[in-house]
Length: 291
Image (cartoon, rainbow, N blue to C red; front, side):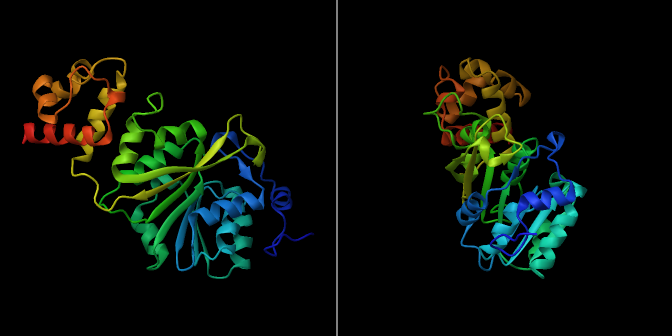
């Protein structure tokens, strides 16, 4: 058997040996290009002294890159039991530096990851399974307390999702609730695109790597109210705020016109014209009105 630069078999041989055909039901698309996995690891770096949480490692291509680029520990969360033997081989090759949690990342509490990190600062770096990517990001952005348990997110999404994460009112078509949440609690930027040909099997869409660095002191407002206001406003994004926010205001038993006035928002504007600061003012106005 041939060996890759890190002393382990090439990923294609690992996949063949363990019968790891990617499963669409698990949102799997494996990365075999070591140059690309190395680029992602470098984007998350420097990694010396850092514990990296990886979701959906599959056969371990990115896992190997993270370890090779100096991560003190990689905590890999994998729900596909077929991949565990391949990950065990990586753990044996890098003694004491790879911990594997078998299970669903959406069910893993932050406290479990903090314990596994053994005091090291945590970064999350992953080629996220497409079918849970947005749910995981939302969970990490909404976690409490804040600042969060991690110091940086370096994540791969379908490009259309990545654009929705980093959008501002200048990109109206992509700007929505996810962008408001990401922009409120983090500084988000798109790092680079990844073509379908880099994956096995190749997806039908381009992917993008996004970096999110938490804001230590985001604008003060209630997360629940911010999220609900953004969901209501963008749920009827073609309508003016005085109409799209009616249900939100009615649910709080407050007048929508008074709410918008308190937030300093033009009632004839649409959701896509309101920046993150404007949504934060809206949430604070709602909180004051129901206090």
